[in-house]
Image (cartoon, rainbow, N blue to C red; front, side, top):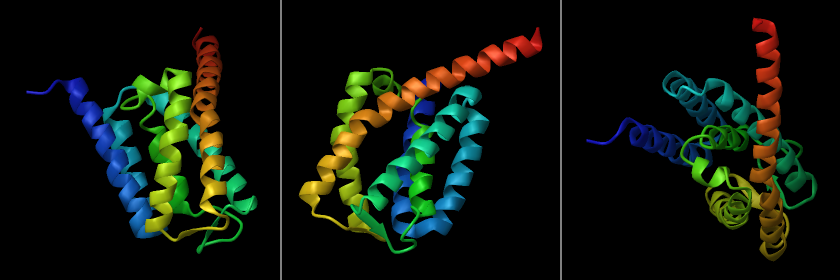
Length: 179
């Protein structure tokens, strides 16, 4: 029999991994449906709702900024839009947000390790994602992949820094309101 914590972790990993495939292979419509269902399911079973809501919102904002840098920098392009990242890609960022306090907490809570993991895994994920999705490289891979790696040296540590600041702020405000 597996423990409740392990079951939650496995569920969290599966939500993300299945979501990655749905987003990459099925496009924006199904990505949106899956992500909405995953968010509803996640928030119904995981008790850290405030922490997770902050993690998701910050992931979405950072993801939009990250993708806009790649898009406007001429490193990647999308069939769906020349000026904005497609919904399926933003859904991936939302799904990432629900993993950070759960299945990825072991790495997320260690800024140096999360920077290194991001710098290694993100270019691999983008490489696979572009091969399988409607995205296309606009620049040579030897230029784009190191840029993605450099950006991801910052993404997870910055996300953690911002999350802790926002959570602290929200908790102070809610404490004042309840007193």
